[in-house]
View 1 (spheres, helix red, strand yellow):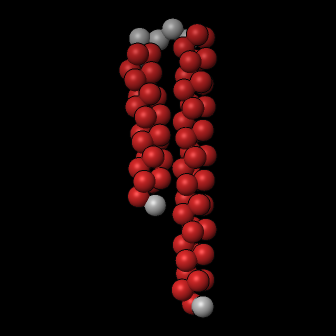
View 2 (tube, helix red, strand yellow):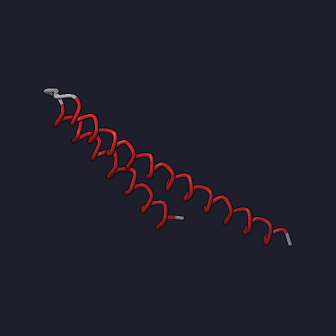
View 3 (cartoon, one colour):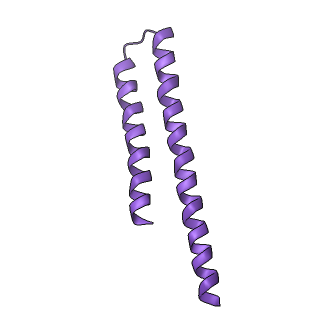
Length: 72
């Protein structure tokens, strides 16, 4: 009986972690869109560096989601 509760609690925790990482991935996509819109409005010299950082952030968010999906 006690192991059933721990298995269910563990499964719920894993689902919540993956859900949170999924929401963070959507947030990373929103950052990419905002940077794209900002690039059209502002012409700055550091724009390529900022775009690179945004895509690195997106890749890290997606990578961590898939890593958690495999590990959990």
